[in-house]
Length: 160
Image: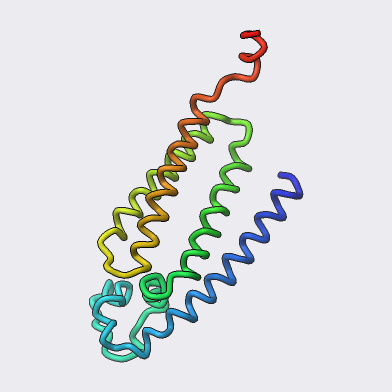
């Protein structure tokens, strides 16, 4: 791994941490909105608990609320995480073209599944994430196809 790749990983991780903190802070607004607890406390309801008090709400539900109603920092957080994952895949599979293609194809499938998961949301954040995951999934699958069918290096000299 080169120093440049290592530096990119560190900077991306720092941005991810900052955006995660900002998302959590913005999502803490759910504590002041009890009428929204029924629709935005999915992690609290996993334990078969109804949120009766602000102390009952899981910290993960802050992220859900922020993604639904204040999507800037959650979007930047997902973007930083996506870049980190793509950079890690690039570092791991730089010399293995077929594995890189499979990595991009898998990432594209994951993005498309995520797009389908959030596509029913009537909120602005849900629409933003649906579009991001849909476009990102198509780009990742297209990148995987391009990597898979990439011509060998010596092919151009053979054709001349």
